[in-house]
Image (cartoon, rainbow, N blue to C red; front, side, top):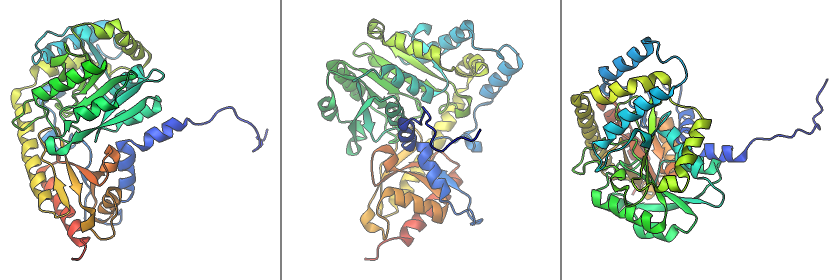
Length: 419
């Protein structure tokens, strides 16, 4: 039977999926990678664009982590679906690991395991997306929050981070945005994309503002402990007695294994507010509907958290510190760049002075032409909510970073406006 072109079908694509996909980092990187000159065999691609250094030898995970995963796989105990005892053992290990930095002891019941940090974001945004609600997101920020809020039809309001104050939250601006339908705010610390590491007192002010406004805090700590400044990493959950905190974490960044897809949500809420208002139940219900982490990764977690040697962590921090300094110094030498020094994570933000460039009108055009002419990829600030900025990832081999900076410098001088 031939189907008529006039036949009526009762389905169509979801417009929110298209809109949400367009604002993801992956979408922007796909566009930039399509502009690389495939015919230029003289230059390898330098990826200064995303936070996955796992493919570089200097950033390989520890042997302890590899052995733990292999042993879990070869034990044949983790070939089936996740069982409650497996989840409990992993949750207990995570609670004990995180409690070292808290003024109170976390329980295994406070910990929910996820298939990575992004899955944790998905779970929380979906659980909080009730009709009429809104959420406060940082600008610049991590666009997965925008994408998932868009997909779930959750209204977004953006508060500013202040670059001249080490990217601190504009508390007054935040409070002006909130109303009685504001369910949560998102804080990313250590910062993606800004590389900020918030001081303890600033985190307390955020918690106090959240309490005043009657909202919870989603604390994205995917880059927890990856700090190399004078500011130590302080988890937001330290202030869980002031306002309820939902912390997102994972093994992707500190252990350099994003492909292992393991993370957690921690309910830092000694006062039980999340339970009283049904939020804890909503989160657990959504987790019951969806997928969980790979079972063999779940089985490896207790050993990974307990047995990873301190020198692995310190070596990674030293490498990131060196790379951050090189990146900052290299960009400072380029007249059209104003970089802001990173204190943690794997990134720094740099402002572009478009008036110093010939025939390049905005950050997206800058990044597209840089990819085409130099096979160097940096992320346009447009993807992060801040136009005419770029995010530069320095978590690559030092030689690759220096090569990438050299290409950026050559590109900028070649396209400089003649005075």
